[in-house]
Length: 403
Ligand SMILES: [Zn+2]
Image (cartoon, rainbow, N blue to C red):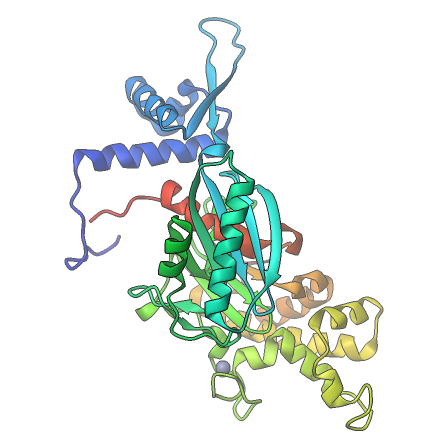
Protein backbone atom coordinates (compact mmCIF):
# COMPACT_ATOMS: atom_id res chain seq x y z
CA UNK A 1 0.00 0.00 0.00
CA UNK A 2 1.27 3.46 -0.86
CA UNK A 3 0.45 6.39 1.39
CA UNK A 4 -1.40 9.14 -0.45
CA UNK A 5 0.90 12.12 -0.86
CA UNK A 6 -1.19 15.23 -0.28
CA UNK A 7 1.49 17.41 -1.85
CA UNK A 8 1.44 15.50 -5.11
CA UNK A 9 -1.70 13.61 -6.08
CA UNK A 10 -3.98 13.11 -9.05
CA UNK A 11 -7.66 12.37 -8.49
CA UNK A 12 -9.17 9.52 -10.48
CA UNK A 13 -11.41 10.34 -13.45
CA UNK A 14 -13.33 8.04 -15.79
CA UNK A 15 -10.23 8.32 -18.00
CA UNK A 16 -8.17 6.77 -15.20
CA UNK A 17 -10.11 3.49 -15.31
CA UNK A 18 -9.79 3.34 -19.08
CA UNK A 19 -6.09 4.11 -18.89
CA UNK A 20 -5.40 1.40 -16.29
CA UNK A 21 -7.34 -1.28 -18.17
CA UNK A 22 -5.75 -0.27 -21.41
CA UNK A 23 -2.23 -0.61 -19.98
CA UNK A 24 -3.12 -3.98 -18.43
CA UNK A 25 -4.30 -5.09 -21.87
CA UNK A 26 -1.13 -3.81 -23.54
CA UNK A 27 0.97 -5.80 -21.06
CA UNK A 28 -1.16 -8.94 -21.53
CA UNK A 29 -0.66 -8.72 -25.30
CA UNK A 30 3.08 -8.16 -24.78
CA UNK A 31 3.27 -11.31 -22.66
CA UNK A 32 0.99 -13.64 -24.61
CA UNK A 33 1.17 -12.41 -28.21
CA UNK A 34 -0.15 -13.43 -30.65
CA UNK A 35 -3.33 -13.51 -28.61
CA UNK A 36 -7.05 -13.56 -29.39
CA UNK A 37 -9.67 -11.27 -27.82
CA UNK A 38 -11.24 -14.33 -26.18
CA UNK A 39 -7.94 -15.14 -24.49
CA UNK A 40 -7.59 -11.52 -23.36
CA UNK A 41 -11.04 -11.80 -21.76
CA UNK A 42 -9.88 -14.86 -19.89
CA UNK A 43 -6.55 -13.34 -18.80
CA UNK A 44 -8.07 -10.01 -17.71
CA UNK A 45 -11.47 -11.04 -16.42
CA UNK A 46 -12.98 -8.10 -18.33
CA UNK A 47 -16.24 -8.29 -20.33
CA UNK A 48 -16.10 -9.09 -24.04
CA UNK A 49 -17.39 -5.61 -24.96
CA UNK A 50 -14.76 -3.89 -22.80
CA UNK A 51 -11.95 -5.98 -24.27
CA UNK A 52 -13.19 -5.23 -27.80
CA UNK A 53 -13.47 -1.49 -27.12
CA UNK A 54 -9.97 -1.29 -25.65
CA UNK A 55 -8.51 -3.40 -28.46
CA UNK A 56 -10.15 -1.16 -31.09
CA UNK A 57 -8.73 1.94 -29.46
CA UNK A 58 -5.23 0.46 -29.17
CA UNK A 59 -5.41 -0.58 -32.84
CA UNK A 60 -6.55 2.94 -33.81
CA UNK A 61 -3.65 4.40 -31.82
CA UNK A 62 -1.34 1.95 -33.62
CA UNK A 63 -0.17 0.21 -30.42
CA UNK A 64 -1.68 -3.09 -31.56
CA UNK A 65 -1.91 -4.81 -34.92
CA UNK A 66 -4.23 -7.52 -36.10
CA UNK A 67 -2.38 -10.47 -37.52
CA UNK A 68 -3.01 -14.05 -38.53
CA UNK A 69 -6.40 -15.72 -38.25
CA UNK A 70 -6.44 -18.61 -35.79
CA UNK A 71 -7.75 -22.06 -36.47
CA UNK A 72 -10.50 -23.39 -34.24
CA UNK A 73 -12.37 -26.63 -34.89
CA UNK A 74 -15.76 -24.86 -34.63
CA UNK A 75 -17.21 -21.36 -34.64
CA UNK A 76 -15.77 -18.02 -35.71
CA UNK A 77 -12.05 -17.95 -36.39
CA UNK A 78 -10.30 -15.49 -34.04
CA UNK A 79 -7.97 -12.76 -35.31
CA UNK A 80 -4.82 -12.61 -33.26
CA UNK A 81 -3.51 -9.38 -31.80
CA UNK A 82 0.11 -8.43 -31.37
CA UNK A 83 2.15 -5.35 -30.55
CA UNK A 84 2.93 -3.01 -33.41
CA UNK A 85 6.68 -2.87 -32.81
CA UNK A 86 7.12 0.09 -35.15
CA UNK A 87 4.76 2.23 -33.07
CA UNK A 88 7.32 3.08 -30.43
CA UNK A 89 10.83 3.71 -31.62
CA UNK A 90 13.34 4.57 -28.93
CA UNK A 91 16.85 5.96 -29.13
CA UNK A 92 18.96 4.51 -26.34
CA UNK A 93 22.20 6.15 -25.20
CA UNK A 94 24.60 4.45 -22.80
CA UNK A 95 27.16 6.97 -21.57
CA UNK A 96 30.31 5.50 -20.06
CA UNK A 97 33.49 7.39 -19.16
CA UNK A 98 35.42 6.46 -22.34
CA UNK A 99 32.75 5.47 -24.86
CA UNK A 100 29.11 6.31 -25.47
CA UNK A 101 26.95 3.80 -27.32
CA UNK A 102 23.82 4.81 -29.23
CA UNK A 103 21.14 2.46 -30.51
CA UNK A 104 17.77 2.56 -32.19
CA UNK A 105 15.25 0.09 -30.88
CA UNK A 106 11.68 -0.86 -31.61
CA UNK A 107 9.09 -1.64 -28.94
CA UNK A 108 10.32 -5.24 -28.53
CA UNK A 109 13.77 -3.99 -27.36
CA UNK A 110 15.43 -5.31 -30.52
CA UNK A 111 18.28 -3.07 -31.60
CA UNK A 112 17.91 -2.04 -35.24
CA UNK A 113 21.18 -0.12 -35.37
CA UNK A 114 24.02 0.65 -33.04
CA UNK A 115 27.05 2.91 -33.07
CA UNK A 116 29.51 4.43 -30.66
CA UNK A 117 31.41 7.65 -30.12
CA UNK A 118 34.00 8.87 -27.63
CA UNK A 119 32.72 10.51 -24.45
CA UNK A 120 34.13 14.04 -24.28
CA UNK A 121 35.53 15.49 -21.09
CA UNK A 122 33.79 18.76 -21.97
CA UNK A 123 30.04 18.27 -21.47
CA UNK A 124 29.08 21.20 -23.75
CA UNK A 125 30.96 19.73 -26.69
CA UNK A 126 29.59 16.29 -25.83
CA UNK A 127 25.95 17.39 -25.79
CA UNK A 128 26.24 19.08 -29.19
CA UNK A 129 27.93 16.01 -30.74
CA UNK A 130 25.46 13.62 -29.12
CA UNK A 131 22.40 15.56 -30.33
CA UNK A 132 23.77 15.51 -33.88
CA UNK A 133 24.30 11.75 -33.72
CA UNK A 134 20.80 11.15 -32.31
CA UNK A 135 19.19 13.22 -35.06
CA UNK A 136 21.26 11.42 -37.73
CA UNK A 137 20.22 8.00 -36.36
CA UNK A 138 16.55 8.98 -36.41
CA UNK A 139 16.84 10.25 -39.98
CA UNK A 140 18.51 6.99 -41.00
CA UNK A 141 15.61 4.92 -39.56
CA UNK A 142 12.50 6.83 -40.56
CA UNK A 143 10.03 3.92 -40.45
CA UNK A 144 9.68 4.15 -36.68
CA UNK A 145 7.74 6.83 -34.92
CA UNK A 146 9.87 7.88 -31.97
CA UNK A 147 8.56 8.16 -28.43
CA UNK A 148 11.71 9.29 -26.70
CA UNK A 149 15.39 9.08 -25.88
CA UNK A 150 16.53 6.98 -22.92
CA UNK A 151 19.93 7.71 -21.41
CA UNK A 152 21.86 5.72 -18.85
CA UNK A 153 24.94 7.19 -17.22
CA UNK A 154 27.35 6.54 -14.37
CA UNK A 155 25.93 9.23 -12.12
CA UNK A 156 22.86 10.22 -10.16
CA UNK A 157 20.14 12.56 -11.26
CA UNK A 158 18.33 14.92 -8.92
CA UNK A 159 14.70 13.88 -9.29
CA UNK A 160 13.29 17.37 -8.84
CA UNK A 161 15.68 19.41 -11.00
CA UNK A 162 16.67 16.55 -13.41
CA UNK A 163 20.26 17.77 -13.08
CA UNK A 164 23.20 15.40 -13.08
CA UNK A 165 24.49 15.71 -9.54
CA UNK A 166 26.99 12.92 -8.87
CA UNK A 167 29.12 11.57 -11.71
CA UNK A 168 32.71 11.30 -10.45
CA UNK A 169 33.90 8.98 -13.25
CA UNK A 170 32.68 11.42 -15.93
CA UNK A 171 34.01 14.53 -14.23
CA UNK A 172 30.86 16.48 -15.08
CA UNK A 173 28.92 18.26 -12.40
CA UNK A 174 25.59 20.05 -12.05
CA UNK A 175 24.59 19.57 -15.66
CA UNK A 176 21.16 19.77 -17.27
CA UNK A 177 21.48 17.18 -20.02
CA UNK A 178 17.73 16.63 -20.23
CA UNK A 179 16.56 20.10 -21.26
CA UNK A 180 19.41 20.65 -23.70
CA UNK A 181 18.89 17.29 -25.44
CA UNK A 182 15.12 17.71 -25.53
CA UNK A 183 15.54 21.05 -27.26
CA UNK A 184 18.03 19.64 -29.75
CA UNK A 185 16.08 16.48 -30.65
CA UNK A 186 12.45 17.52 -30.08
CA UNK A 187 11.87 14.26 -28.17
CA UNK A 188 11.24 13.61 -24.48
CA UNK A 189 14.49 12.53 -22.78
CA UNK A 190 14.59 10.13 -19.83
CA UNK A 191 17.82 10.18 -17.85
CA UNK A 192 18.70 7.48 -15.38
CA UNK A 193 21.60 6.13 -13.40
CA UNK A 194 23.07 3.05 -15.14
CA UNK A 195 22.32 0.69 -12.24
CA UNK A 196 18.71 1.91 -12.03
CA UNK A 197 18.37 1.49 -15.80
CA UNK A 198 19.77 -2.07 -15.58
CA UNK A 199 17.34 -2.90 -12.78
CA UNK A 200 14.45 -1.64 -14.94
CA UNK A 201 15.73 -3.62 -17.94
CA UNK A 202 15.67 -6.80 -15.87
CA UNK A 203 12.21 -6.03 -14.55
CA UNK A 204 10.84 -5.38 -18.05
CA UNK A 205 12.68 -7.90 -20.16
CA UNK A 206 14.66 -10.19 -17.86
CA UNK A 207 14.22 -13.86 -18.57
CA UNK A 208 12.53 -15.97 -15.90
CA UNK A 209 11.79 -12.92 -13.78
CA UNK A 210 8.01 -13.08 -14.02
CA UNK A 211 6.47 -12.17 -10.68
CA UNK A 212 9.68 -10.65 -9.31
CA UNK A 213 8.87 -7.47 -7.35
CA UNK A 214 12.13 -6.94 -5.46
CA UNK A 215 15.21 -6.73 -7.58
CA UNK A 216 18.66 -5.30 -7.08
CA UNK A 217 21.11 -4.57 -9.91
CA UNK A 218 24.80 -4.11 -9.11
CA UNK A 219 26.84 -2.53 -11.91
CA UNK A 220 30.55 -3.15 -11.63
CA UNK A 221 32.97 -1.17 -13.78
CA UNK A 222 35.47 1.46 -12.62
CA UNK A 223 32.74 2.36 -10.17
CA UNK A 224 30.12 0.30 -8.36
CA UNK A 225 26.53 1.41 -8.35
CA UNK A 226 23.33 -0.20 -7.15
CA UNK A 227 19.81 0.09 -8.55
CA UNK A 228 16.92 -1.09 -6.36
CA UNK A 229 13.39 -2.01 -7.28
CA UNK A 230 11.37 -2.67 -4.15
CA UNK A 231 7.69 -3.64 -4.28
CA UNK A 232 7.85 -3.12 -8.06
CA UNK A 233 9.06 0.48 -7.82
CA UNK A 234 12.43 2.07 -8.32
CA UNK A 235 13.87 3.43 -5.08
CA UNK A 236 15.33 6.90 -5.62
CA UNK A 237 15.70 8.25 -2.11
CA UNK A 238 16.05 11.87 -1.15
CA UNK A 239 17.26 13.91 -4.20
CA UNK A 240 17.68 10.70 -6.24
CA UNK A 241 21.02 9.43 -4.91
CA UNK A 242 19.81 6.19 -3.24
CA UNK A 243 21.90 3.19 -4.24
CA UNK A 244 25.38 4.59 -3.72
CA UNK A 245 26.45 1.50 -1.80
CA UNK A 246 29.71 1.73 -3.76
CA UNK A 247 30.60 4.53 -1.36
CA UNK A 248 29.74 2.75 1.85
CA UNK A 249 32.95 2.10 3.77
CA UNK A 250 33.87 -1.58 4.02
CA UNK A 251 37.41 -1.30 5.34
CA UNK A 252 38.60 1.15 7.95
CA UNK A 253 41.72 2.96 6.79
CA UNK A 254 41.43 1.29 3.38
CA UNK A 255 42.58 2.86 0.09
CA UNK A 256 41.47 6.40 -0.70
CA UNK A 257 38.32 6.65 -2.84
CA UNK A 258 37.49 9.37 -5.36
CA UNK A 259 34.55 10.43 -3.14
CA UNK A 260 37.05 11.53 -0.50
CA UNK A 261 36.50 8.68 1.97
CA UNK A 262 38.62 5.63 2.59
CA UNK A 263 37.93 1.93 2.08
CA UNK A 264 34.67 2.33 0.13
CA UNK A 265 33.21 -0.85 -1.39
CA UNK A 266 33.99 0.58 -4.86
CA UNK A 267 37.66 1.08 -4.11
CA UNK A 268 37.90 -2.58 -3.00
CA UNK A 269 35.72 -4.42 -5.52
CA UNK A 270 35.58 -2.44 -8.80
CA UNK A 271 37.49 -3.16 -12.02
CA UNK A 272 40.12 -0.59 -11.04
CA UNK A 273 40.55 -2.40 -7.73
CA UNK A 274 41.44 -5.61 -9.61
CA UNK A 275 43.95 -3.64 -11.70
CA UNK A 276 45.43 -2.26 -8.48
CA UNK A 277 45.68 -5.72 -6.86
CA UNK A 278 47.41 -6.95 -10.00
CA UNK A 279 49.94 -4.10 -10.00
CA UNK A 280 50.58 -4.43 -6.26
CA UNK A 281 51.75 -7.99 -6.77
CA UNK A 282 54.35 -6.91 -9.39
CA UNK A 283 57.98 -7.42 -8.51
CA UNK A 284 59.46 -5.30 -11.32
CA UNK A 285 61.15 -2.07 -10.07
CA UNK A 286 59.38 1.27 -10.49
CA UNK A 287 59.82 2.99 -13.87
CA UNK A 288 60.50 -0.23 -15.81
CA UNK A 289 58.03 -1.91 -18.14
CA UNK A 290 55.82 -4.16 -16.03
CA UNK A 291 56.40 -2.19 -12.83
CA UNK A 292 53.61 -1.37 -10.37
CA UNK A 293 53.02 2.15 -11.67
CA UNK A 294 53.01 0.85 -15.22
CA UNK A 295 50.50 -1.88 -14.51
CA UNK A 296 48.10 0.26 -12.53
CA UNK A 297 46.91 1.34 -15.97
CA UNK A 298 46.26 -2.21 -17.17
CA UNK A 299 42.70 -2.36 -18.50
CA UNK A 300 40.39 -4.80 -16.72
CA UNK A 301 39.79 -6.62 -20.04
CA UNK A 302 43.50 -7.49 -20.15
CA UNK A 303 43.32 -8.94 -16.65
CA UNK A 304 40.39 -11.12 -17.73
CA UNK A 305 42.37 -12.30 -20.75
CA UNK A 306 45.29 -13.20 -18.48
CA UNK A 307 42.86 -15.06 -16.21
CA UNK A 308 41.69 -17.09 -19.21
CA UNK A 309 45.31 -18.12 -19.70
CA UNK A 310 45.47 -19.04 -16.00
CA UNK A 311 48.06 -16.36 -15.22
CA UNK A 312 48.52 -16.82 -11.43
CA UNK A 313 48.86 -13.09 -10.61
CA UNK A 314 45.81 -12.14 -12.62
CA UNK A 315 43.80 -15.00 -11.05
CA UNK A 316 44.84 -13.83 -7.60
CA UNK A 317 43.85 -10.22 -8.36
CA UNK A 318 40.46 -11.30 -9.68
CA UNK A 319 39.97 -13.51 -6.64
CA UNK A 320 40.66 -10.57 -4.28
CA UNK A 321 38.15 -8.46 -6.19
CA UNK A 322 35.59 -11.30 -6.06
CA UNK A 323 35.96 -11.61 -2.27
CA UNK A 324 35.20 -7.94 -1.76
CA UNK A 325 32.39 -8.07 -4.29
CA UNK A 326 30.89 -10.96 -2.31
CA UNK A 327 31.18 -9.07 0.98
CA UNK A 328 29.25 -6.11 -0.42
CA UNK A 329 26.64 -8.31 -2.08
CA UNK A 330 26.15 -10.09 1.26
CA UNK A 331 25.35 -6.69 2.79
CA UNK A 332 22.75 -6.01 0.08
CA UNK A 333 21.20 -9.47 0.39
CA UNK A 334 20.86 -9.18 4.17
CA UNK A 335 19.76 -5.56 4.17
CA UNK A 336 17.32 -5.56 1.27
CA UNK A 337 16.24 -9.22 0.89
CA UNK A 338 15.64 -9.00 -2.87
CA UNK A 339 14.10 -11.88 -4.82
CA UNK A 340 16.85 -11.48 -7.38
CA UNK A 341 20.20 -9.69 -7.45
CA UNK A 342 21.78 -9.24 -10.88
CA UNK A 343 25.42 -8.39 -11.46
CA UNK A 344 26.21 -6.30 -14.54
CA UNK A 345 29.65 -5.67 -15.98
CA UNK A 346 32.71 -7.20 -17.63
CA UNK A 347 33.36 -9.21 -14.46
CA UNK A 348 30.47 -11.54 -15.42
CA UNK A 349 32.65 -12.82 -18.32
CA UNK A 350 34.68 -14.63 -15.65
CA UNK A 351 31.64 -15.65 -13.56
CA UNK A 352 32.82 -19.27 -13.55
CA UNK A 353 35.64 -18.09 -11.28
CA UNK A 354 33.99 -15.08 -9.59
CA UNK A 355 30.51 -16.56 -8.98
CA UNK A 356 31.56 -19.30 -6.53
CA UNK A 357 33.66 -16.83 -4.48
CA UNK A 358 30.71 -14.41 -4.31
CA UNK A 359 28.28 -17.22 -3.44
CA UNK A 360 30.57 -18.44 -0.67
CA UNK A 361 30.92 -14.94 0.82
CA UNK A 362 27.16 -14.40 0.70
CA UNK A 363 26.46 -17.77 2.29
CA UNK A 364 28.98 -17.10 5.06
CA UNK A 365 27.98 -13.49 5.79
CA UNK A 366 24.25 -13.36 5.11
CA UNK A 367 21.77 -15.40 7.12
CA UNK A 368 19.01 -14.54 4.64
CA UNK A 369 20.97 -15.70 1.59
CA UNK A 370 18.63 -18.57 0.69
CA UNK A 371 15.83 -16.19 -0.37
CA UNK A 372 17.88 -14.36 -3.03
CA UNK A 373 18.92 -15.61 -6.45
CA UNK A 374 22.23 -14.06 -7.59
CA UNK A 375 22.48 -13.92 -11.36
CA UNK A 376 25.19 -12.61 -13.69
CA UNK A 377 23.85 -10.78 -16.76
CA UNK A 378 25.13 -11.68 -20.20
CA UNK A 379 27.34 -8.81 -21.45
CA UNK A 380 26.36 -9.71 -25.03
CA UNK A 381 22.76 -8.76 -24.16
CA UNK A 382 23.98 -5.20 -23.38
CA UNK A 383 22.01 -4.69 -20.17
CA UNK A 384 22.85 -0.97 -19.86
CA UNK A 385 21.60 -0.26 -23.35
CA UNK A 386 18.48 -2.40 -22.83
CA UNK A 387 17.89 -0.31 -19.72
CA UNK A 388 17.73 2.89 -21.75
CA UNK A 389 14.93 1.38 -23.85
CA UNK A 390 13.04 0.34 -20.69
CA UNK A 391 13.20 3.96 -19.49
CA UNK A 392 11.01 5.09 -22.37
CA UNK A 393 8.82 1.97 -22.60
CA UNK A 394 7.80 2.15 -18.95
CA UNK A 395 6.07 5.47 -19.69
CA UNK A 396 3.63 3.53 -21.88
CA UNK A 397 3.55 0.09 -20.26
CA UNK A 398 3.95 1.02 -16.59
CA UNK A 399 1.06 1.61 -14.17
CA UNK A 400 -0.25 5.18 -14.39
CA UNK A 401 0.42 7.19 -11.26
CA UNK A 402 -2.73 7.91 -9.33
CA UNK A 403 -3.56 9.26 -5.89
ZN1 LIG B 1 33.84 6.36 -2.12
